[in-house]
Length: 440
Ligand SMILES: [Zn+2]
Image 1 (cartoon, rainbow, N blue to C red):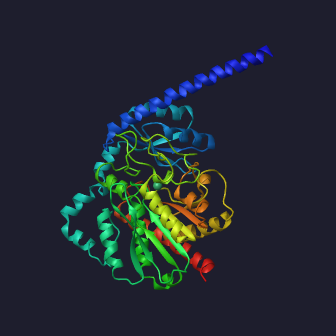
Image 2: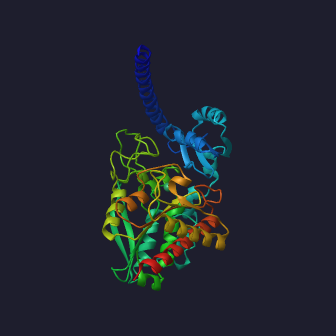
Image 3: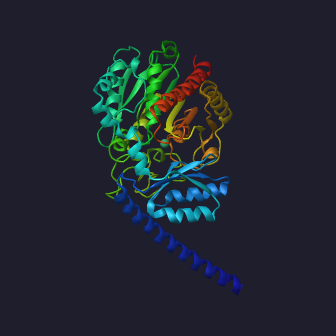
């Protein structure tokens, strides 16, 4: 009895000490976050990207625990496939020690991120435009039949192209769905001949740095807009770019910016991870309460005007299918993302996902893995995919991580040309399924 009372007292003391330690640790992280937030300012000199191959769930959990630590940024989330992690210079020694202790195999994918950016043409997009006026004029023609998807566009140029092409089609309309934190107009293109038809909603680019995603959605729009047969049977809402503020910031200032641009309690740390900000098991797993983290879930669900705009569109048009494009990883994911559970209709989602992956494999010889988010990646809650199924009742939901061919966030012009076709092929297979099973 005495022993167990002593043990209880010891336990209480230990847990108080642990709590204290955790508080100190958290405060240290926040301070370090502020330091790093001040420090790199989009420069990334000395930052390294490691390729990691965790082959057990314990090793994946070790990697996942790093998400909350300052100076670590997962470019490709830890999961069954290899993942990529950018590490700040001041953390590299500690990181390598930790990987060796956990027996996680690492190789260096990028030795110096700043150097990688200097060599990379896509980041110099604005300069290329100035030096190549002929190309610029061709891109800005309202008729985009000749638009070849060999480069990344500014948000304003995307809007100009979309407005130009939509103006010529009686079945297409541009609708304003909201305004970003910095005042940019958010748009969706509606393709429809009859409001009673089943609705498919497609978006891309909730994460600023994932440039291949909005370009893929634009390509899908380019192909769908002239497909009169499909538009007779289905209605589409297509949002080319969900996070224009973050996208433009990643073009101009900080190539690896992921979040929105809203202000947080820490003046030097801005933005919320839009894909952790939806009201579905918000802030439960794979998210961060620290405003300086890349995975900051926000002060409350739907704190961001961008996520509210998508929420309001989904709840008003009630799609039967929702597809959200991200980059990168070569994955076709379906809910749930918050925990390793499966929705009731997972066999339909899995078979359809496989069918779409098989078609990409047949046409391009590129493999996409198919599975529930938490089976292929580690749990992350508050995503638009989970919310649309759980709270808005969307039946068919996919989150696509596009292939990158090893180029990570910077696919070359030739790679981009193929990636957008992967996206379109997936959508064609999905669309056919909805047409055959959900349209009257
Ligand atoms: Zn993403």
